[in-house]
Image 1 (cartoon, rainbow, N blue to C red):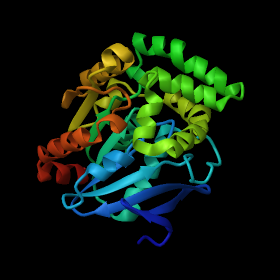
Image 2: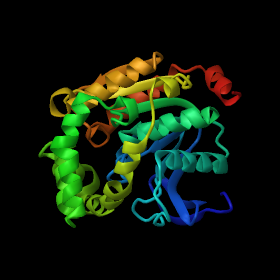
Image 3: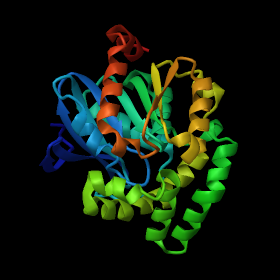
Length: 300
C-alpha cells in the first residue's frame, strides 16, 4: 500500500483509500484485481456512477481502480477552483503512486474530457480511452449543446445559485436522463444513494461546470492523441439528449482512430442502466489492443 494513503473501509471492490494530491486535497479510490489496469473515472454530479460497472468487470482479467475525484463525497474540499487539467493531474498522481505504467481510461461525460486531457499531457499513462457520451467541452460544443444549455444547464445553475440544490439536481438530471431518472438511481444505488448523489452535486454546479466551460480542446489538441479510442452512445440519446450524439460525432471527426458504438436501450444514464453490457463492451475493446501498442505509448 502506498505510504501516503489512508484506508477508510472495505467493500466488494476492495479497500477504499484516500490519497493526497495537492494543497490539502485528495482523491478516493478502490483498487482490486490483477491484470491490465482499468481506471474508472466518474462523470460530474455524483461519484457513484461507475460502482455497478466496477462490480461487473472481471477481477481475474483486470486490475480495476475506481476513482472518487477531488471535491466529491468524502474527499477533502479543494482549496481552489479545479480545472479539468487538475483532475487529470490528480489521476496521474494516483497512477504514479500505484505504480501503474499505463491504464485503460474509462470515462463518462465530463470525465471523458479529463481522460483526453491526460492522454494529451501524459500519454504514457493512457493505454486506451473508452468514452461514454463525452460532455460538450471545447470544440465539441455545437448547436445542440447550446440548446441543452438554454433548456437545462442554465436554469439548473440559476436554481443552484438561488440556494435550491435539490431543485438544481432534479432539473439537470431530468434533462440528461428523463423523468424516470430517480428510479434508475435508486434501482442501482438505493434511496440513500440518490440522497448522497443530490448532496454531493453541489461541487458539480459550483466548480465543475465552469471547468468544462473553460476547457480548451480542438483539432490541435486532438492531433496529439494517438491512443485507441471507443466512443459509446446510448441508443435513446439521439432523441432524448441530441447534444450527446452531436458531441460524439464531433469527437469522432477529430480522432480518426476512434470507433463509435451505440448501446441500445439506454441514455446518458447508461452506467446505471446497462453496467453488464458496458463491461462486456469494454472487455471486448481492450482485447483488440495489442500489448505492444500499450508498451509503445508508455515509451513515448
